Image 1: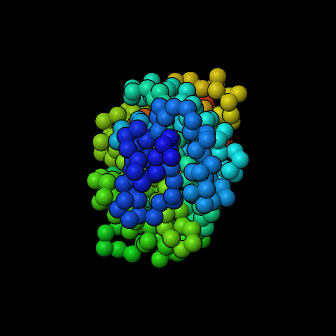
Image 2: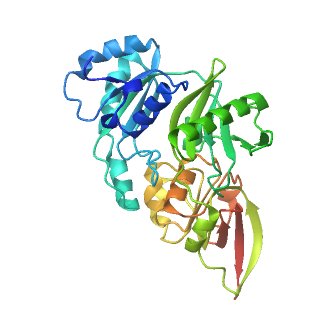
Image 3: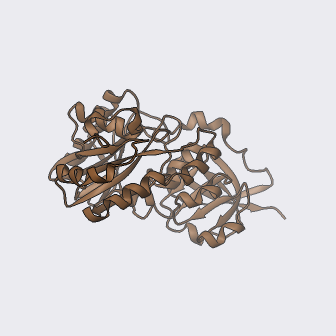
Length: 361
């Protein structure tokens, strides 16, 4: 084989995600076996693909982007590139092509955050796992920056977390203490949470800095699917960008509680957005309230004072992008869509509260 590079041997032309996974493989982590189609690989890879799939010895595959700018210290490009899971052999070629050219959303996002534009991506093809549970482990609290491992877990595949479709189980492990389950969904037991935390802590040691580790449990093994630097900042660091306190002419009413997902405070008019058809209703400086976000919502997120979602956790698209944009975010607020549209609110992303402000007449 000449076009495809074994994941274990991934180099810079294979993109950031592949390089990190290759390093973890070489140091003994359980990473699903795979190959990478590097950037500028040229023609002829289609003829080699059947041999790649045979070597992976699977019935279905994960086809994932590995961009040059992806998974960096300043920006993750979360959800901006294309990934397909559980792809049958007959469809892998089409998905590789689709992933390699799906860069327009990433270019738009790069412009918004002032990062280099993403022109091309490498493509990873891996054997697909059938996990009993999956999720993410942060080796620092992504909201406060404190030293602790925060785990979010769901049954089955972890893509539910990024999409914000799932209400995750959440664990916290602090040095010298046993794992503590904060929101139980009967996904992990204490032993499994401990294993995940150990894998994440070791990844931090190997990769040299706080990490956001995507993991899955299959056949009793903790697998690493991705690891990237945590792009969050602490609440203290974010305080300088926080919105001013509410006017003295207002009186707080509330509050409503949710999961702190991005630190800081802001206030503005609350705007409930049901879907794409409502985008024109949203004005710069308003507080975005919705069920969940996807890359298509980025134009609203960059103009929002804060974001509140009814679903999701710390790894949801809304939470990740909010932390990178340095705006407060609160997730898992089931009653959020019932809040009064247009009301003036104060959002505290560090405490996880939305407080209505009664305006003086």
